[in-house]
Length: 127
Image (cartoon, helix red, strand yellow):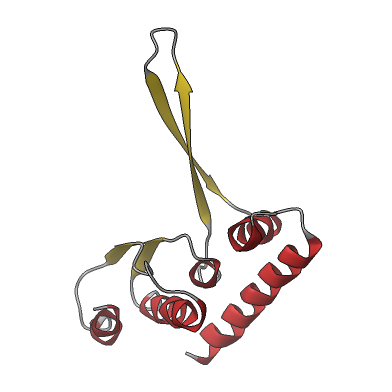
């Protein structure tokens, strides 16, 4: 379906596509290809993607982190609150490192995140 949308994007009147975990069940090279195709689609329309894969997130022109917090009240029920934050480039590297290794402070995870971003930028420029 994603491949069809990429092909039709130049003539399709739909201005925005929203993909919720379009990358579920894949990883590695397949995830990179999905990220590349989403970047190609984004050349023609607005694309919003919910993903847990750093290989896909690296292709984004803007990275937005959504966090969910649940706190108990005195009555014993839970209150859920969400926060949405646009990440600056330095924080984006930390977030990708967290997605990769669960260790946003790790120098090797951050280096890998920077490598993912550089590879995505090179790949996207060839599209």
